[in-house]
Amino acid sequence: MSLATDASDKPTLYKRIRADIEKRILTGEWPPGHRIPFEHELVARYGCSRMTVNKALSELAQADLIERRRRAGSFVRRPQHQSAVLKIADIRAEITALGRGYGYELISRKLRAATAADRERLGIKKAGKVVAICCRHSADNVPFAVEDRLIDLSSVPSAATADFSREPPGSWLLHHVPWTEAEHTISAIVADDRTAAALDIAVGAPCLVIDRYTWRSARTITAVRLLYPGDSHRLVARFKGG
Amino acid sequence: MSLATDASDKPTLYKRIRADIEKRILTGEWPPGHRIPFEHELVARYGCSRMTVNKALSELAQADLIERRRRAGSFVRRPQHQSAVLKIADIRAEITALGRGYGYELISRKLRAATAADRERLGIKKAGKVVAICCRHSADNVPFAVEDRLIDLSSVPSAATADFSREPPGSWLLHHVPWTEAEHTISAIVADDRTAAALDIAVGAPCLVIDRYTWRSARTITAVRLLYPGDSHRLVARFKGG
DNA sequence: TTGACTTATATGTCTAGACATATAATCGTA
DNA sequence: TACGATTATATGTCTAGACATATAAGTCAA
Image 1 (cartoon, rainbow over the protein chains, first blue to last red):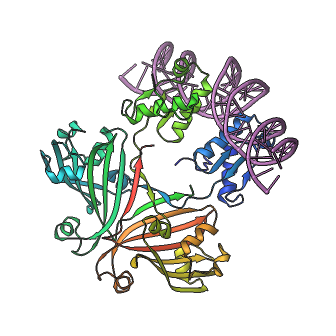
Image 2: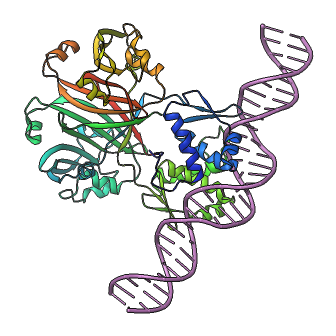
Image 3: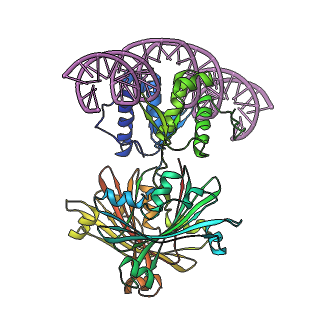
């Protein structure tokens, strides 16, 4: 998410070249398929060495804004409408970023041998221990989301002794577990009795559901289901053609 | 030392350096916060010039895998909170990809001067004409989603004469409008009478809502609201660190 | 017309330097 | 001890070249 045309920092030459081209692409002046000037033409125009131009173009290519073809030149890529970047922030960070007071409440925490249901949810086969956590996040004392999480202790042994009564498990994991892969499934349900009570909404009110499975090198770390009041919470996925 | 994961294509040196580092990060060998070797150390290890090492590190920085700090060195970044790639395919393509029969039905199409509500929805101030479209997508003759769309004709004049009785507006726009930015907002509602009838579900059943605003260079092109039956449709967002 | 061969050329990668600049560390002083 | 000035150093940017390589385009023969 990097190439914003930042006017704040002093622009170096290659950044200016990159920004110039980016602007022409984004405004539609150079539509998809358009051949952008050859490196040697840009060298002449900006009066710099080829490496400088090359760096600008390489970054645009890495960002999928242009496509470079040997002997043929560099071309503006077609927008790829089928993907968008969905930012799902850590809930505490999300609420804090909104300038609202973050509240956290641990509802239950159980350490147990994985049941058949646990194993299925985590996609693991061997027996082992898990931590099951249920908690609630609130913003300015209004329920924001309820979280139902399972952590595989064989993947994250230190979660057994972590103090989740103060720190939300999501934040803790973010700081204790290195790079991961994850899959999110987003759906909608209507609130049942228990959910309605936890979120302080009416039974039958819509809820947004995010199921997230996180793993590292083919090993499931945690499975979590987040329930948000559907009419008040919104997930925003920003997309920039590419 | 490092084994090439793919022996098929000949890896260049800077790509090998980048891959070596990336691997150590992804496996957790170099956890978040870990300082990776200085450029001059990598220069010594790989026996190349500093520019070659610099190119590898710059790309890793552009991909947000590492953070570079002057005088201090380069450090492994924390996983990007939870940014995920959300695949929102063109609905026709999505249904076809599932091997199901795609059905499309134009419910209404109106060309009108933008009302105050239209202008607010599109975020435009000046008066102008818009096309309002309501349509339904189905898979194997089962309602899949209803679409409620507004297109700003001052941005896309050709939409006035496009034939939306055969081709869904989403597909049409994809092929006729160049580079865009978009923002998706995902929420949940319960079906009202009209929605329930259109989707052939019960009143009060949960629905997943996607509101998408598409613009080009600060100019809104189209605003669309898609309603899916919440218990049958799911959005999947896959995420991979880096 | 078609296929095989040749050539021209734009990009891909790399070098061995250079100076700029932000800042972590150190040192000196109040 | 606290704070301001100095220094050392890693990264940031850039140059003027070099050779490699994929491939569009042209050439020629069957």
